[in-house]
Image (cartoon, rainbow, N blue to C red; front, side):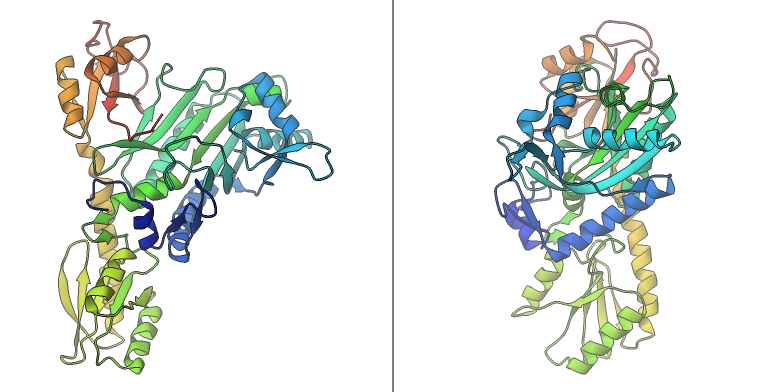
Length: 459
């Protein structure tokens, strides 16, 4: 990227050894080992949080009978024009290829409940999802074959408010631990999906370094639509389903928030390579082996950087997002430890015992990076006291927080007049929860509505 505010290109992501974009077809990507390990560490954080909250992981087939989606189309909403289809070789019918989970898991939930499984039902699933996107394809942000696609589905009776709140707060806490800054918003009814599909839509969003906003995670309150359509029930009380999801764009946002002048700088806990080792010309193979052995014994992921010269080896460390570079210096008996995030350097002893102190240094660096990056949302919003301030506020690269009615035409008219994007209601504020009056119509006790600039192509 030419600057931290630019969007990573396919070449950027390949040079960072994350993906090869467009392989084997446009809108799909091959994950490289380095990027796969980075992604795996992120997925592990989310899976652990959901499993601690009582969710169970399962794997679902990538083929679903077309009749299942016929049921969804007839009773809820028709997505069939965006699905990939495959005909059975014996000509007996068509199947949907790699859909999202809502309709498919509904048939599973119906069977579990018929077998007497207790409510609530909570599952997670990670897989590839296929959907026919037209135009504006962008690696990891808008793909046709999406991996990873992390979904959680809940079926329960009664008040769904606490469960929705958990599906917002728990992922936000995970993102904070990743150093990925977020805000929680609720889409307004006029800006959300048709009410034929969901009652509510809540999102975690992030403001990228260039000031543009993008959605990272979503929570849909599906009401009883799927349980009615697929006969998912337990007793006479309506059964509500909730869906949570995120895709590879969360990884893309993490990479972009990690980008420095010369490449990404990942937190030590996430980085596949924590310490990039740069040997000098006089470094022997035995010395290099001893360094890696001592690093491994201290629990440090270290790798020797290769390249035709020192500058090339430094750049490779930057491309891989290594947070620390260790220059081996055989002439002084001291090696140079340099933190790319802080640009701080100090000399370390050439002794295996010194790696225990290096481990502590990595932990401190990780905490500092996590805290500084996760704290960024404190500067993202500016409260406007007059509608004439909205356009200039958004133009400065932040979000405008405006007291407005959260229903009706007030937010839409403000967005149109200011030439900005309507983002949604700040969550967890409830409807009519900010006090004062609506700046557009004067109604009492309005919501806090956010306006900003979405990334090009964002819905």
